Image (tube, rainbow, N blue to C red; front, side, top):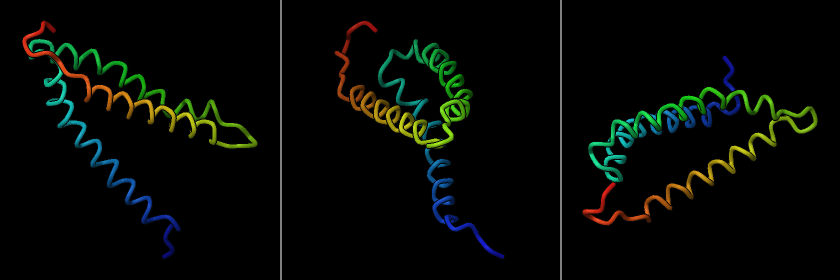
Length: 105
């Protein structure tokens, strides 16, 4: 039986993707409480859930729309890379921002 030439890379991707989703479940419930008042955690989780669900639904559509016969998915992959860089910068910015203890939220 022949295996795919990139089977190891595919399995590694599946492993890290699953780890990332599992960690997201844990971190989402705890990290948000670090940045907002306990009374607002549920409201904020709900507000963050809808855009996230819409983005997950549209994500497969966008590379298909951006596909070009001559270049394939190159433009879509560059846009995904740019979005990832913006997300990392936003996370770093959020980590550097400090709340003043006792300030209203």
